[in-house]
Structures are given as C-alpha cells and as structure tokens.
Image 1 (cartoon, rainbow, N blue to C red):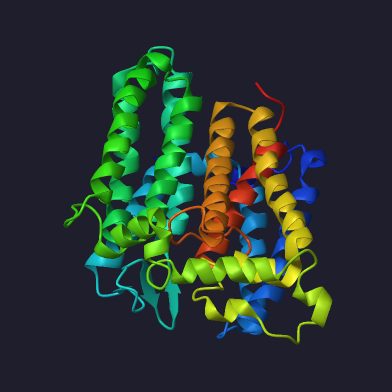
Image 2 (tube, one colour):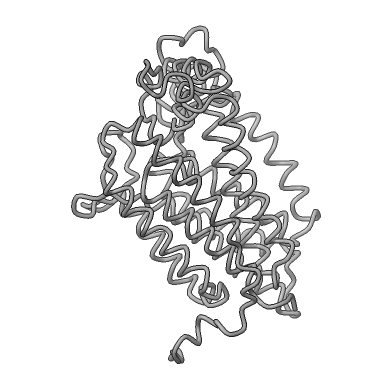
Length: 387
C-alpha cells in the first residue's frame, strides 16, 4: 500500500482542539528538568552542561513533534516499530555493538561515543502495540475481545521483547513492561472470566517463586547478584556491610537532608553523604535530591510527579477513543511503576534494582522515552471530541 503523503495531512493540524494543548504539563516537565540539571551538576562526577542542554533541547523537540502527530497514524506503523524495538533489545546481547559498560548487564548499544538503552523506548512501543492490538477487537464487531485467544496473543506480543530484555539481565525493565501488560489487560475489556482464573494461578506462583528464591542453592532464571539483593533485603542485618551497604548509605543520606535540605542550610558548601552512594545520578538520584532539598522539597517534587501521573488518567478519561484511552493507561502505569520502584529502592523499602526516575535521572534514553510519553498524552488531549 502506498501512503498518501499530502503536506501535513498526517499531522491533522486543522482539526486539533488546540485549546486543550496542555501547557501546565509541559511546565511541570520543564521544572523537573531544571531540578535534574541542578542535582546532576552536584552529584554526577562526569556531568556536562553542554550535553545536558543538548539532551533537553532534543527531548523537548521530540515531545513537540510527537504531540502534533496523530497517535492513530503512529499506531498504523506499530508492526514496524515493534520489529525495530525487538531487534534493538536483541542486539544488545547478540551483536558487536551491544555493551555492558562494565556492569555485566548488556543493556546498551554503542553508537560511536554514545550509548543507547533500547529497553526504555521499547516500553513505549509495547504500549502502542497493545493499544492497537486491543483496538482491532473492539472496533470489529465480528471479533470478541473477551476470549483466551486475545489474552494469549497479548502476552505473546509482550513477552517477545521482554524475553530479550531479561536475557540482558534487566529484570527491572521487564517488570515494568509486564505491569504495563497487566494494567492494559485489566482496562481492555477482556473481562474477569479470563483474568480471574489467570490471577488465581499466577498469584500463588509468585508466592512460590519468592519462597524458591529465599531457599539456599543456585537459582534458575536469576543471576547470583539478583538473588543476593533479594536475600539481603529480607535479612538486612546480615548484609549491612555487603549487599545492603549502598541502600543503607542512601537512607543515611536521605535522613541527613532533614526538613529543609542542606542546600538551604549551608548554601551547598558542606559535606554530602550521597557521595558514598554509587549510581547517584540515575538509579539512586532520589538520594541527592533528598539531601539537597530535604523533606519539604521532596514533597514538592513528589507532587509534580503525581501531577503527571494524574494527568495520564485524566487523558484516559477524556480520550477521543479506545486507542487513546489505552495508550494513556499504559503511560500512567509506566510512570507509576518507575517512580515507585526508584524511590522505593533509594529508601530501602524495596530490593535494590535499577530503574530511572522519570525526568530526573541522568540518561538520554530514559529522557527520550519520557518525552515521547508526554507528547502522546498531549496529542490525546488535543484530538477532536470523543466519537
């Protein structure tokens, strides 16, 4: 099929409801980006203001472009996006350009002097693919979405890229994608007749899996360091100087921020406990944030992150159609899980696992994924009235 590429027809600019263009959402993202720049300049040893500014300009440009591209047009190409994303996550492990950056986890592609983490963009691709897939069954009266066929096909679509991400040894990103699948299944209309029996089987299996992890001996499906982190979390007193050392230092650093934060007390010239915490610019970025801004500053930042998540659900409620609703729900799930896991790990209420904090952690891949998500949310809001 030859696409008809009339000038800007695919953008559908004339029929958008521009009054609904969400500048408040953009303003919150800008504020979080400025906070991130300040924190990274303090906490990241290899911070480059030039690289940061270039990344933000690139990110906001991508966000604007996606916000005016009709998400229905994007969904027409989900097979292509899905294939490319799957090939990229596979390439991290099975190609010469895949690299582990000395972490023993092959999560990145080496592109010249730069590194790209395809699992971040894969989250967005899975959301778009599942939304388009479920929509085919909703729009077609001859197809029944409440069937085991739909359930297993949705799982199959999700598990192919997720399997390659697990091979990378990136359990945390795999969990995010699986949770996106779960929430989109619940919201899709598949129904309790399908999901009820699945939950009755899966929940006990999850309990048995955790019991299996805590028993002595080698474990299938998990690397040794992953098992050590879980066991150390369950028995922190035995691993205070071992597996839990980083998280314990993170908690001490967070507590030292007290109510107002050290930035307000000593103008940023005093000792910083977060210097003892590794990956404080990405997976543990909440640690320097808490020490610099204190409890009150953390509450403000949490309010901004919550504002974005609430906006996701508002976009789902007011979406023009089923596809837009499902995309917004998938994005809400992605942001919610990543915020909860990142802060949960830094505060030691969850086992140590690596997930970026949206808009705050260092890394172009994470920022690109988050900006695409914001662009999609804005586009959902400016679509014409619901059909």
